[in-house]
Each structure stands twice: as C-alpha cells, then as structure tokens.
Length: 71
Image (cartoon, one colour):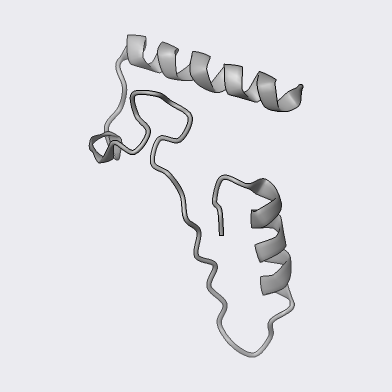
C-alpha cells in the first residue's frame, strides 16, 4: 500500500476494520523524506534534524506541493 496516498490508507483501515478474530497488519511502502528535494531517499536524514536554512527550504517545498494538491 502506498503510504503517501491518503485514499489508499483509508481503504486499508476500512478493510482491516472488517476482520475479526485474528490479528491484522497493514504494510505501507513509503519514500523517506518524500517531497523534500535534498532529503528524498537519503537515509542519512532518518533521525537527523535540519538546520534553520534546511528547514525553511523543506517547508517551502512542502507548502508548494500542498498548494498544488489543493488546486
């Protein structure tokens, strides 16, 4: 399941909710740092905080993507 697709996540939870009497696991596939040019697919960012300049760049990139999605 695509962890970056909210419809896919919602569908997985709905399907999991129909299961009873046994454990359920949802496995999501995701991209580390998705949407931030200098972080995407860079394992070195896992658990590392950006500095102020990097944070501002990341937030600007993510804000631009959000505006594009919202139309």
